[in-house]
Image (cartoon, rainbow, N blue to C red; front, side, top):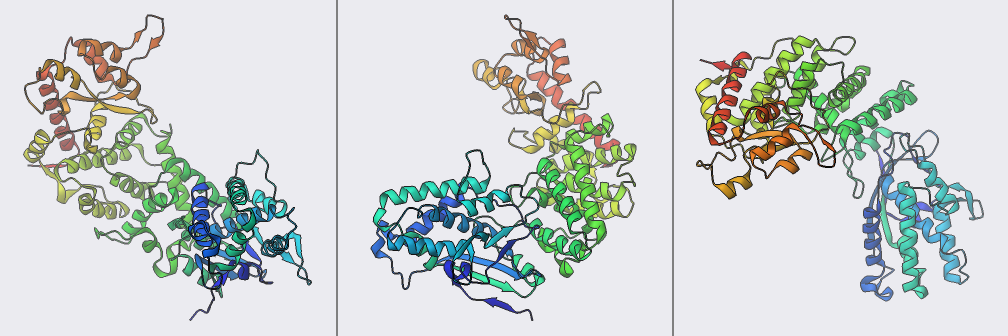
Length: 580
C-alpha cells in the first residue's frame, strides 16, 4: 500500500518549513484564477478573520478556516512537485506578497514581526533564519504559461508594471487594492489580518511517496473554484509516459500545439476544449472494443481502465493530433475537401444533435489513408447517409439519447470496414410522411434549422456559405403581416416548414417585418438613395423566389412544405433508408 504523509498545517507552518521548496511542474496547466476567485477568497478570509467586521470577536486559539488540500511528491531534485493545489498556492503567495509590500515603512513592533513572518513564507532563509530575497520558496516551470516569469518577478520585487496584463499581475493589483482599503478602514489593527491568515488558515498538505500515487490523488480532487478537467489527468499520464521514454520536451511541444488547435475549434460547457477531442476519439476506441452499450461511460472513467493503459502508447497521441487537424479543416472549410463535401459538412453544422461528430470521427479514424485523407466519393456517400438518417430520426424519435441505439452499432461496423446501412432502423415511407406532415417546426426546435440548412443546399446553384456567416430563420410571410392582415387561415401555416428559410442575420433584421413585395429587394440586393450597395442574400432559393413571385401567400406555403417533405423522402430513398 502506498504511504501518504498527511498532517493539516497552517499556512505559516507549511510555508516556513525549512524543507518547503515548491515546484509547479511543466506539465501543469497555466495559472487560471481571475478576479472573481480572488474576490471570493478575500471575502471569505476577511469574514473569518474579522467576524462581523470586529477584530475582537476572533478566537485566535480555536478558530480555523480550511483552504483545501495541497498534493505533492518529492521529485529527484528534492523539490515538492505540486500535483494539485497550484492555483490556491500561487494565489496565497501573491496575497502574502501584497501584504508584505505594505509593511516596508511601518516601524511598530507588530508590523515588523508580521513582515518578518511573511518574508519567511515567501523566501528561503539562511541558517540564522533571515529571509534571502533572491531565493523564492516556489518556482514555476509550466510549459504552456508564457507569463510565469511575471509571477516570480512579482514575488521577488513586489512591483508590477502597468503594461503587465497577466492573471498574476491582475490578481496582485487586486490584492494591493483590497489591502489598501483595509488599511484605511482598520489602521490600528492592520497586522491582525495577515497574521490570522498565516496562523489560522489551514491547508491539508498531502505528500505522496511517488508521482504515481500523487497522480491517483490528483484524479479525485479539485482546485478551489477551478475543477480539474479530464484532460488535466490525461496530460499527467502522457507526461509520465513520454518522460520515461526521454521525450519530455517533445511531448510538451506537441501537447501545447494540440491545446492551441482545440482552443481554436472546440467549445465545452464543462471541462476543457481538449475534453471534446478526447470524447470524439473515445468513440473510435469504444467501437474497436465492439462496445454497443447505450450507456456511455464518463470520459475519465473510460480512459482510466487498466491504469490508463490506453494512453500509454505512441499511437494515441498521433491519432489525437490527426483527429484534431481533421476537425480544424472541417471548421475552417478547408479547400482540401471537395465543394460537395464542404456543402454536406455545412449542413451537418446545423445538425439537431452532436451524434454526427462522433460518427464522423470514427469514420475518419477508420478510413483515413497514410496522408490523413479520405476518399472523396466514399465520404460524400457517408455524409449523405448520416444526414438523412439523423434528420429523420430526430423527427420520428426525438432526443440524442434515442439516437445512441442505432448509432453505436454502426460505429462498430465502420471500424470493421463495413458500410453504414442502419439496416435495423430503416423507415417506412408513410410513417416518415405522416411524422413530417404533422410536425410543428417551431424556431426553438433544432431540427427546424437543420431541415432548412439541408433544403438550402438541395438547390444545385447554391454556393457554399462561409461557416462564420450567422444565419437565422426567416418567416417568408412575416408574423407582423399576419397580425395586421390576417390572411393565413390555418393556424400552423405561419410556423410551417414551407414558410421558413435561412437568411443572413444582417438581412433578416431589415426584412423580418415586411410584406413580401418589400422583402424582395432585401433578398435581391439594392442600392440605397445615398448610393450604398446592400448585397443580396446568399440563399439562392430566396433570390429565385423574389425574381419569380409578386407575393407569397398561404397556398405557396402549403405547396412548398409538401415539396420539401417529398424531396426529403426521396433523399431517404436514395440513401437506402426506406423500407416498403
